Length: 491
Image 1: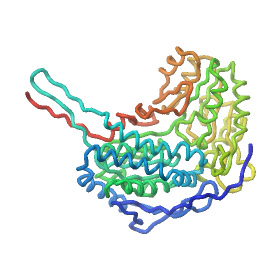
Image 2: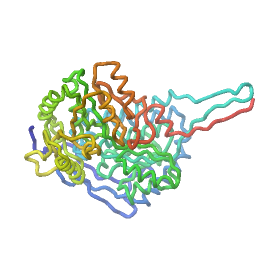
Image 3: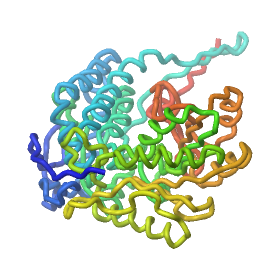
């Protein structure tokens, strides 16, 4: 496995201010914090640290904007602006990709090929999709006519994670704006830069002042908590860790806010002996280690039918050895740096726990040679554990997978479902009947068959159990971001 020394980057990092009522502003109390590059541990810049006063200013601006020019726009005028945001993201693609990789430590090719194009597409898709929606109408014999009116939910708080910062923020912002809402965005404190540029892009696209607001800062007892608790916020959409989601639910309950959650996952990757093993290996490399394994949809629990278990491991280990770990700004790099020192220590603690639980580190499990700085970790494959081990049951959120053999379809379905998570699953088989049969029994919001991470934005996306509440995508997004009123007219 090759390693590389960090190289010079081509785009300058930016300091990050709040964006409130159409202007970039510092925190009311002047507080700031450092933004750290996870690949070098150097300070990229400073970030305004928001608190309750900043959140209140942003919420009041959003509340006022609900009654301003934004409300008076036709659907065509509003969606033209939403589409323009996507266009401007593409115009600034190179800049955004560099900033995203600086903030996250992910390879630049990944930011350029996936994060930024998909962010633009979110605006393009939702600007068009809302035009396909129609309202319900029903007639009660000759007595009455009923029809529904769809209107914006109101002021919506968008709380975003650090692993796919711009992609997931736009996944929320695009339908929220298309539906006519105003928003307050709270990006993860570890990844503030592309959210800051996005606010500028929204202004340049013609979004009226106050419609899109941005407050940087931390979560508990800070900006995140203030946004959740604010009485003038009508809804909160959150992507992130499950325990944080629980805390948000408790705080939001005092004002009965509408909630939409996409939370953690510990997703099964089920490989039957009749599958195409070369295809399986190629995709499993991605579903295990892409974005340093910091993707809630990664298939970190790999179950392999026993008759091909050894063959799978031989090929999987050999292919994983070829993954280059290192500088995110070198094209050949496949695995960059983990997001922070705290997260690096958390992930590596699970590797030590695996040893205590009787597991064998078949590959990786350590910092690559030649990297004294940066939060780098070799892709790690663990065997010898069973379904009861913490390493198999708890979300690690790093380049760490466990591989477990199974003997029967019934056994692997039971193992796959033996978790309090239920976000996604992948099934590999060339038996069509088995594919339908197993997919129908897996307790997950999305089940892929012979693929992974393939999404149609019209389809429902979300998790079961402790992996989420509600669904997003297509009409499901607009069900969250709008209120329905039924009008009953006596005939």
